[in-house]
Image (cartoon, rainbow, N blue to C red):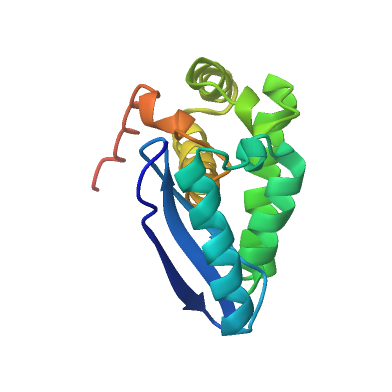
Length: 167
């Protein structure tokens, strides 16, 4: 996308991040620095490349397992190891099932097929939990700029598990 670059710097903890738009898609990525001067320099470089239409979209060709590792590292700072291990198992199950090497390989139909397999094998509660975990991961990938669109947005809603009768 050519035109005026619109970007914004912000901090998460000590690390500087940038939010900007490419092809109408909001991108957010870490600049991997705690120094504001370096962050501003990187921001200016990104702004210039976006304006020239030369922004490197290789960030969108992220290895799925690398992205999972980054996701878990980001989450371990705020969550328990047990929670992160559960997240890892669910996302690994999806990646193995759909044989996704790159994040771009995650398509809505593949996610939906995986969830139908989980639904048939383990029931509604487990399938809904899997979708929740996968959705958390794919939304994080979208915020990081690794995915253009969240593949779980187009997944059909799963049935609600029946409530146990009150006795």
